[in-house]
Amino acid sequence: MNWIRVLVVVIGVALVAIAVLPLIVLLDLAGGGDGFGVCTGGLGGCRTSYFDGPELLGVLGLVGFVLVVALRAALQAQAAEERRREDKTFGPSVGGRDRLGGR
Image: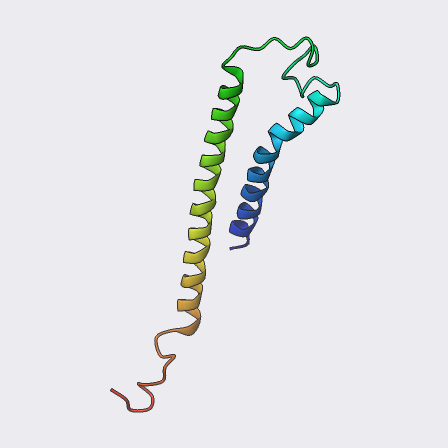
C-alpha cells in the first residue's frame, strides 16, 4: 500500500512540473536565456514555425491527461486496497448479532 502512496505523490509532482514548465521557459527567455533549448540564439534570434506553440501545448496536454488518468487509477487502487484491508480486519461478525441470538 505504501508504494501506491508513493506513486500518487510522484504523479502529483509530475502534474505540477508540466503545469509550471511553460512558465519556467518563458521566464528564462525573458531573462536573456535560450528557454532551455527552445530558442538556441536567445529570444532575438528565435526562428520557430507557427506550429511549435500548438505542438508544445498538445504534447503537454496529452501528458497531463495521461497523468490524470494514472492518478485516478492509482487512487482507485488505493481505495480498493483499503477496503480489502478493512474486510480482512473486521470480518463478518462485527455487529455481534449472531453471538447475541439475533436474527
